[in-house]
Length: 74
Length: 221
Image (tube, rainbow over all chains, first blue to last red; front, side, top):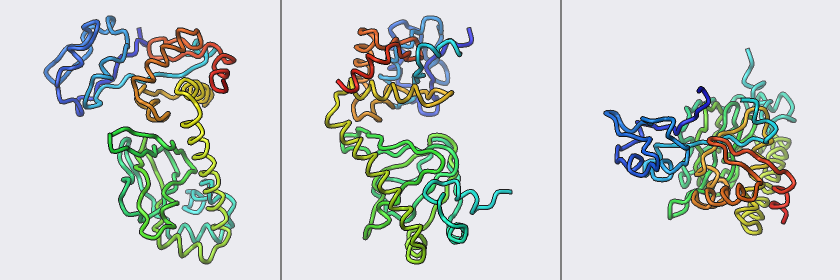
């Protein structure tokens, strides 16, 4: 599924504190060797909790804003 | 190859100026390039130059002592910044400006712009028109912050963003909060409220607007 958008993690900003891993309500995030990653992408609900928790602003969950009649364009 | 004067002509504040004046400006305008996320100027630093965006987008913001950010403007090609403190004695940059994407701009040193204004009254009038537009924008912003609820501001913002052309912007809730003078948690809660009232639908990474009339009522109501 190409349009299954996931939170974007900037590993250069990340200090590997692990808050995103602990707070993910679906346990979709894991800590890897270089930092956190979405280990179970289909479990991610894009709830934005990881973005809200990250003290380094290393995770972002951007939204597109569209009219209902245009949403079929993707 | 496009000359520097031609590229300056595309900048709105210079668009109506005669070619001789554009040539004068081109002699002192210094081209600069910035990468995504790079800071162009810092709030509080002495104002040394005015900037005119040729390509890309820049974000103008002020940060409170508590760390809360208020985005004042998002500038695109043809727009300018840091012209106001240029006219103040010992003026300092009034905001921090960062490159949203790759930015190409022209910087004109304070002393050079003042010298140009002394000999080019049309440039002075063009800058005054730019100041008038800016004053209008800030007056609207004050009205928004003081008279509208977060729900009303968010409804207006969503309507504006959904109309910005073929490519929809992608914004985080934190970015929306900074643009609307509130905090991220408030944006998350208000988006939920608008969704509960069937005005929008939260669809994974999309905010889908469902009811134009209802959202417009929130703006004016």
